[in-house]
Image (cartoon, rainbow, N blue to C red; front, side, top):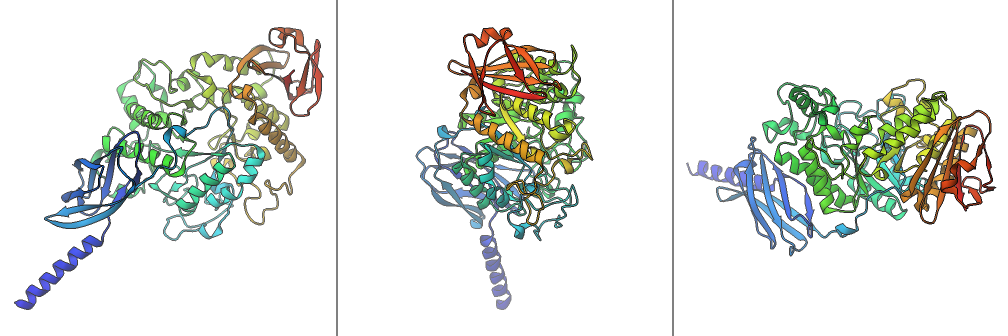
Amino acid sequence: MLARKLLYSLSLFLFSVSLIAQQPRVEPMNWWVGMKNQELQLLVHGENIGETNPVISYAGVTVRRIHKADSKNYLFIDLVISKSTKPGVFPILFKKEGKTAYSYNYTLQQRKKDASLVKGFTAADVIYLITPDRFANGDISNDIASTMQEKKIDRKNDYGRHGGDIRGMIDQLGYMADMGYTAIWPTPLLENDMPRSSYHGYAITDYYKVDPRFGTLEEYKELADKARQKGIKLIFDGVVNHSGSNYWWMKDLPFHNWINYPDSVQITNHRRTVNEDPYASMVDKELMVKGWFVSSMPDLNQQNPFLASYLVQNSIWWIETLGLGGIRQDTYPYSQKKFLEQWTCTIMNEYPGFSIVGEEWSTNPLIAAYWQKGKLNNSGYNGCMKSTMDFPLQANLVQALTEPENWDKGLVKLYEALANDFVYANPKNLLVFGDNHDMDRLFTQLKNDVDLVQMALSYLLTIRGIPQLYYGTELLIENTAKPGDHGLIRTDFPGGWKGDAVNGFTGAGLSNDQVRVQAFLKKLLNWRKNKKVIHEGNTLHFAPAKGIYVYFRYGKEETVMVVLNKNTGATVINTERFGEIIKNKKTAVNVLTGDQLSLTKELSVAPRSALILELR
């Protein structure tokens, strides 16, 4: 009997010790003192942890409320961190029947930078969009992670993993800075533990973990720090609408309504106009924002207040951890409107100088304008997002350059597209681009015409807005053989892998056209860096005529004239038509050649080109 009692006591002791040794999952894993918003909500996950009572004893930290979830394996703890709280580490003890079942040492850090000093991307920047898996493989040791479902590297498979990583981007920061880019936007670098096609990053399975095949959190921080040292801002690609189906919580959801349609998967109808449509049915509205993006991407229910707080705090955690220069938010109009207001306004309240741009893939400017801060809407949305992606202008740019010239086509489309700026709250904050990771390469869209590519790039880098260029555009990367093939659109950057015969970073093996476009773009990007008139100036344009479109960017001290000539021959234009802006200016300097020109009555423009002049 005594032996049985001793054995029983020993087993209880060992059980108690084993519980104490366990740490629950706590997210966010750490936080900062001195935040404008003093409230913090912790998600805690551990076996039966919902049956415990968390205890915290740390000066300046108060437990306001404890919430239980549908699953007994979760707790949500509401904390208040006062302004007087000092950085430090304190234990969170999870008590059950007087004993400590779990413990977690929580860290409050000192902020690296005051929130008022955090600056986002602006029209003074040019953003370089990168698909990391396809850009450069700087560390072959992380190509395969034994713990991940997709283990194979196969560069011949458009939808397989190719091995590009964070180290590869770090290694090429010099190239990017030398080219003249001032911001980089890598597609998501967070864990995508999916069985296939996980290279793109948009099926996230852990919002707080860097995918090991891209590298580590420390390398992500290194990328941010070294980019900043070279004058390059780091933009985070966020996905708050959906996760990957293998997200760690999918096997044990905190609440049954943590995701939409948890019992019978329904796919969204993708009818994004229901957000603005005064006649839209409720059934269409519901399916649009609650339906899963695809069958492998569960739709997150941001109407659940705990999930909403989780997502907002996660974004703030990454801003603080990396010192971000902005967020690009994927599939923006697919989320709940009230949540989008909460998400954008909480971030912008904490960081007034920050920048957020949302993806609204619509070529209708009325739809794109709806989401921008300052737009007066009467249909239930008033968010704080400064920028939106200018898909309407992108579509018209391609059409303008590829369609034949007549009275209602060609350059007139570009002219009239810009005239739609009256619907935007602030057109200078729109993100302008020729292509991205989801559409055919610019070279392919422009029918593999090098001259048209240079005209398009000239336009994007001189018109109002924030330019974004896709990696490899400077090397004329194309997907003409397979239009619409996303895997090919996200092709490898030549020279990003050891042994590549062509190297875009060094120039080895490039064709004459590639050398030409790369040099042209480098010249234009570095000129644009210091041109306040392009960043902030006003715009005046003149209706296209006979294959010529002329517009001006101007301010109190500077004026830039841009002439787009689609004609196959050199064209002479009469400058008297532009007298209201040229006025008494007599000469101009060609930005690309440095040649000085006389602004007499006639100006000759080379065929199929853009002439960019600084007026003197």
